[in-house]
Length: 392
Image (cartoon, rainbow, N blue to C red; front, side, top):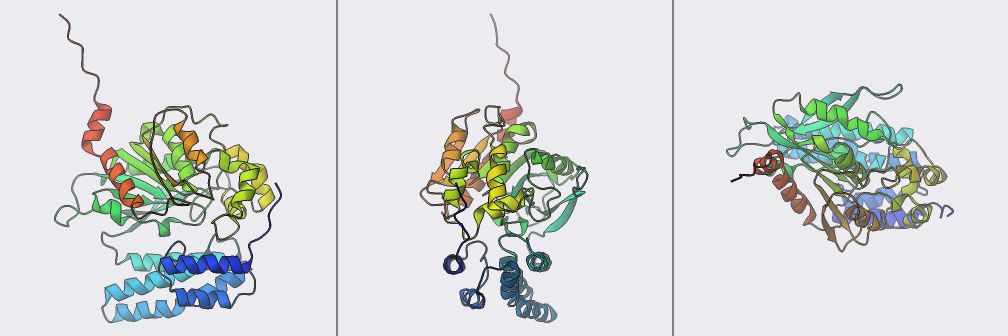
């Protein structure tokens, strides 16, 4: 099907104001009136003009954060750095695919890491060596946080770890860790292939990126490399489902939260989804994560990503939880049903909403499932050999 054409500014404005009102990605901390002011300055969706309009609000919050630091007010410093981060985040949204948006993305990261100095438990920026192909990067960048013990001190025993990543527009800076940390799980936040600081673009075999991540986890004494789970959100759910099959020996569990599998890559769905709930040009943003740029390039390339056609789905897989909204207009719920119809039995929790479900119950549900999957008792059940049969 033909490209239905670009979004109109009025449509984008309406969608962004709704997101600012309810603090939905990318408007996590920004203020609705200032978002409206930035949108009012625009007469087109030119990428660099967009970046400039939203970046303009960040410096005053950077200044307030520095003033708060000078007077010894860490709470105000954290809050203002997060506001500055989020204005730059919106400025680079949905992808840093122009000079202005790329500049905003780097400023976004700077302010996030300044805010992170006040996180509790602390955040550590880590670089995990990656031995890629010519032209690829040499490291995966991640944000590691370790859970506190019962009395608030660091734990002595190695912690189970959840590796978490987002999709085409929500990078590691936007992933939430607190719910998992509170349950005693370490979190390692990364970027999926093709976005943020990932060392390679998305492709039919980009799951190889995680080999070096799992190897790195095994080098950290604070982390239990026998209790590792992955959580991929939105487009990142595609990689979580694939890893559950291709890397099942290295995983205790995996969660595909709102991902794509097969039907989402068909031309008719791509055309339909282009007019769905995503506030920008969905196909072009997907294309950018897989080394392409245009709608037509995505339509031509996307079918090659089908996990069904790749022969992945009928392999055995690690315990896999599927979560989404049944009215998802970005990726069809049929992709989740397809996963249920193939290979190993899987767990599922579907919600009546749109993309990713849209319910406050989702994160606690996923966290409790992962906590159980990563528990010592679950590991004993998985590793314990069969009891011998007594005879006579």
